[in-house]
Length: 229
Image (cartoon, rainbow, N blue to C red; front, side, top):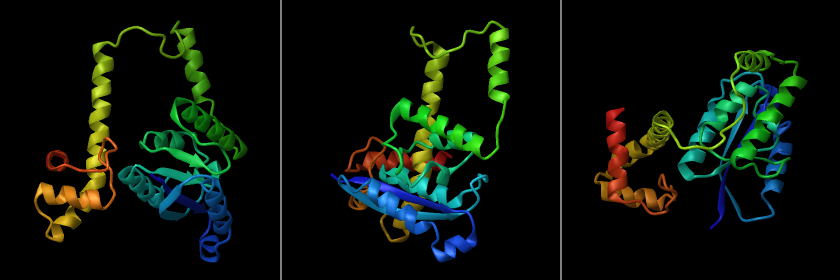
């Protein structure tokens, strides 16, 4: 089965957007990065916005499409996405895989760490240096707090509760992404959960577990979440 991709391009000025300046190079880089293996760009989104600003409606649409289709967001270069570390960290919480054409595929915890470091370098080059992280770590160390990652041991109740809360958040986000499609299907006369399941399967939208076939109970669960939100 071909791997799915959603392409995101960004230019800084309306003039660049109208002329295509920079877009052709980004499209070429994206196409080259996925040419070595089976690939399918299911959607493309173009943003006209400064890299220093966090308001990215086209990016939000791209992320929604990537979540819906379990696709990978592909960008030509990391600086086309953002120069803000904080924004990139929020992006990493969006629940999609991200690939940059000028870098190897980024996956898992190591990939997240690499993205954070690359964003920090881009922020430094743009002159947006912050000492808050260093100050916070120094203060924690001064209080005697042990720094570092997870060192083993069983999960306590609070950790398990946080895990369940995160799962619930992801499930609700998935339901919200599907809501416009469900409304469209209803408008077309597709009413029962079984009919909706068949339609979603035919559209190639995977389930929350990544399955290619929808069931009526899965549709009912999505609708229940939407009715409660």
